[in-house]
Amino acid sequence: MTVLKTRQSRIRQWLSWLLRLALVAVLLLVFSVVSLRPSVPHPGALAGPDIRRIEQLIVDNSPERLSPRGERELILNTEDLNLLTAFVMANVPQTRDAAARVRLTGDTAQAWLSIPLQIGPLTVYLNLRARFAQDEGRARLISLHAGHLPVPRRIMRGAEDMAGERLAAASNASRELAELRHGVRSVTLEDDQLHLTLQWEPETLAQLRSQARQIFMSEQDRQRLLSYYTYIGDLARIAAQQGRTVSLQTFLPDLFALASERAADGSAVAENRSLLQALSLYVNNLSIRELLDGIPDDSVYSPPALHVTLYQRQDLGRHFVSAAAIAASAGAGIAEVLANSKEVYDARYTTGFSFSDMTANVAGLTLGEIATENEAQARQMQLRLRDAGAESAYMPAPDSEDDGMSEEAFIELYRDRGSSLYQSRLNGIEARVSALPLYRTADAP
Image 1 (tube, rainbow, N blue to C red):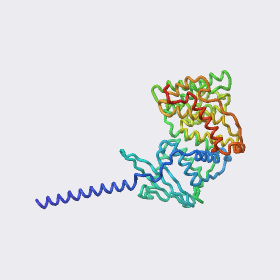
Image 2 (cartoon, rainbow, N blue to C red):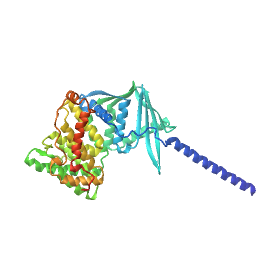
Image 3 (cartoon, rainbow, N blue to C red):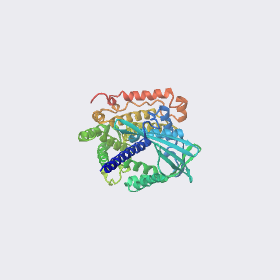
């Protein structure tokens, strides 16, 4: 009996030691993967010169500059690649708290990614480190580490295969967007730079715009968008009896009155977003079929094409509504960069730089941002825009001095967009927009 008790005691001790050892092993495994500190500090908000560099990159590589068909090479150095990565991550809600950094060296690249994880009151970081190198004429992932642990190559390749299978089994929109990757002919690392060779086809941009918009659109979003587009058509048919040119004021108050009614039992943010998306389609003379598949060939969805103006200018109406829709859909940061890039593009290639267009851009992105910031502000904007009595309620008179400047004239007068003279003009526009009672968000409606 004594021997049996002794054995049982030893077994309990062994089990106890095994459990402790297992716990220590688990803790070691966890802390070898996560860390109390990020390997990449969060960069915070991008500075003005960084934003202007991103805008210039968009202008220099604008799809509209490409020839009808053929290949184009996009070359990015370490600085530009990190700028674009930081900008995208800052404007995608799911990645705003994460941070990434890339370093290009010769024909290799290293990338670091820090993802914060909340474990009770403790914040830890999943730090990933990847290495890429040229392999058989293209850049390939060579190694991946999660914290201090290397990820086996079999797992890396398995994850890649699984992602491909999921894309193949996804919705039509997802599959068609995934097929656009075939337009990337090569991705290479050379001379401390990333080289992307793109095969450009005339229909590629249209396909990208159409399918990318649909991927994250729920059935509720779809139905809301259709409802607003149909109502815009009703308003347009009435307005068309008076002529082919109408003010934006013909649409905005009635649309936001409808949004206020619809939001009584739902989300004011969602209603405002769908409203602005539908209005942007119409003002830019785009069919609802550009955004949604399966729309019947019905006159209900084919409203009369009118020239929608702001301060009697169609271009200002388009700038204002487009900026508002982008800010509501993708965030004010992206809207501002795209709007500014458009003005730089115009200065270099088309009609010239326009401060009046900038006024419409600033006013539009302000409206779009506030109208979708949160439920309280969204409902406030619905009521204020419902009662707006004139265009001047949502956009000040345009700053038209020096409109139509070429890039050479702009440089001669302002040097660049970082100059104090240019910033003074831009600050003046922003101040006049912010001064409008419509955009004061401190007081309840």
